[in-house]
Length: 119
Image 1 (cartoon, rainbow, N blue to C red):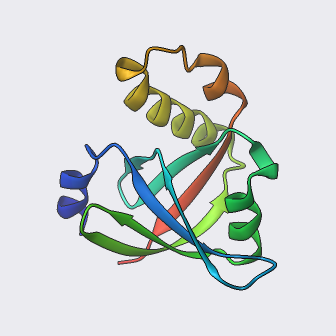
Image 2: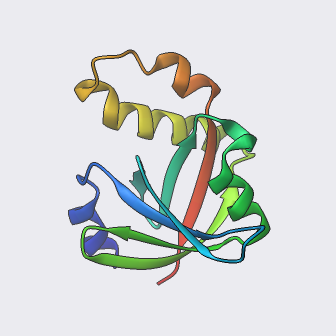
Image 3: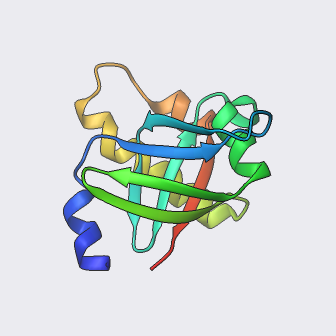
């Protein structure tokens, strides 16, 4: 799966499907991401207030689609200082070159969330 993932790391967006903490229904969003081995990182600009973060905290088992690749993953808030820096660097580094706006502040204040991909 690792070599297959490398092909998909260049995609601009992925689709994250969580289970609604109130409704119990699936919710899918389009969101920026970066891959590092078997872990996918996203940054939540609204931090803990983002609905997708609240949903993933309640039910960490999520689905992620990149192009035609569908994967199961387990979500977790990044707490480790080293992994926090890695997540921010990967996501901002992927998108800053193509964005007109400076992503620096967003990259410093957004909440990093990791998704450990299941084989």
